[in-house]
Length: 389
Ligand SMILES: [Mn+2]
Image 1: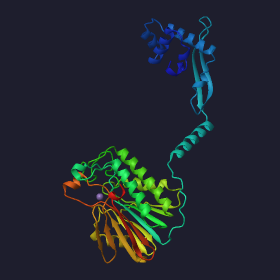
Image 2: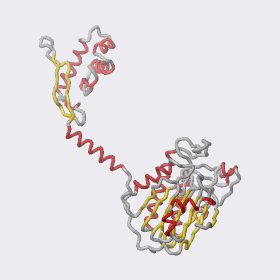
Image 3: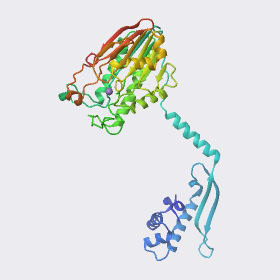
Image 4: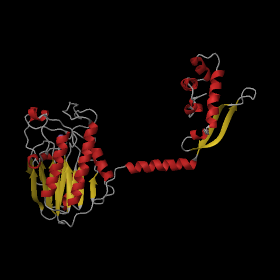
């Protein structure tokens, strides 16, 4: 006898001895073992107690078919009845079932529906009123290092998950409000959005321990929450939002799921495009203006112009103004080569103990740069944390 034979019988065992017998049958592999555990000389006493319980269950309308698993139907019952000269009672009953094909299909469909329901697809946001067609705002966000921990006493400014979340939302609120109206915008997240790239807070290449705040799942949750809010805010100002989630040296894997997640999340929003390029060199074309992006971990500002011109030969060839944007070093640098203007940007994030120990003291800010279809860069707004906090 196995456990399933006595399922549902507990509520009909109403004497102490019957409860003990049911418990022993549940806990032992055979009725003989249950009898031995109860101190009975023979299993007959156990059978007899079970028969009494079943008789009570039957009188109360107990129905074995209630044990039919989901997606199955009853195919037959097999009953072991005691001899009439014993007491003629039911000793054992098997409920034989088979899979119900239709029901199974329905259950699978329900499961599928449930899974689809849970996929977080953003709802389309109402379009803003007509914006200047010829302008495109570029929001630069680089080396934000979500999950980094900095102790102000040591580094000059505190930084943790809470500060990072508050600062970025305030920065974008301000930047969106103060920047010129424009039809299109590019959100260029230039890499190192996440401070580390897996369960252990260590650098990807060297395995050096990073100052972290603190659980990776919290970092991921806040990163997603921030991006969704920022994108919704951008959609209220701009007709078209283009997203770049660049690879950084701190988040080579993290940036992959950031790109793919953004793409899946906004599939139903025709006003958003997402750069899913797996190469760490990105490009956006705005009529006569071409914009190029790279974190800065593979190429430095002084030797990157030919990489962009070569990799995006056609875009480069048909545009008149070319600008490359980079991060990684956390401080400002700009140079103009024969091919394009190359700019390395500051970050909004505070310095960590590592940067402090090496004597890096970069200023903190991020720009919104406005490009005209015919004239290239026509405006720039630089916003520091002090301006928004
Ligand atoms: Mn970096």
